Image (cartoon, rainbow, N blue to C red; front, side):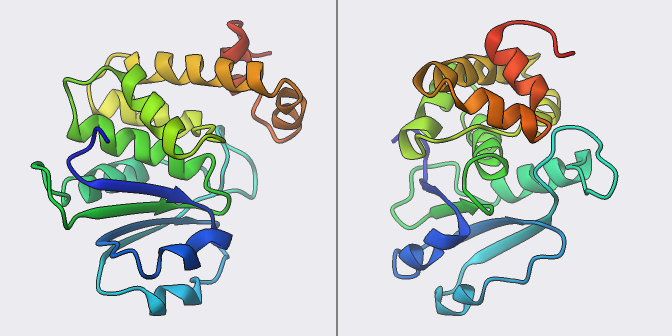
Length: 193
């Protein structure tokens, strides 16, 4: 564990598994019209930030793309976590599937908490706890700039994409169908069309 607090990432269908784990901080990233998960009533007392954005990496008509103010809220929430190792602090970040928006947010929270740690190590840690991670590039790009990492987090994310496609080559076509061409192009080391 590299963070000064325990971390977890999940999707909506896994939230019940965290009810009794002593989570102290929850970052919920939900689609704009999705109801608040009832399971939160079973969680103990915790700090909670809820964001309402769609999982898109570019402006798309009819969708709420992540914006700078959303990323700023994620980073502000991350600053409420202890900077020193704490046996009590446990952060859970979730979105619908626990793959894109949540993992991007976790990367940024860790990058902020561990500014001296290389972004590649941060991405490795997120992939360790969430092997299917595919961090949302739009969120990563904005967060990298806000944290003054000069493209380091973006570059490490591109490397993580490449590793994911090497492990699961069929994923590229599915991602392209969902408007994630910039991410696939980054994984393949070429410019998006």
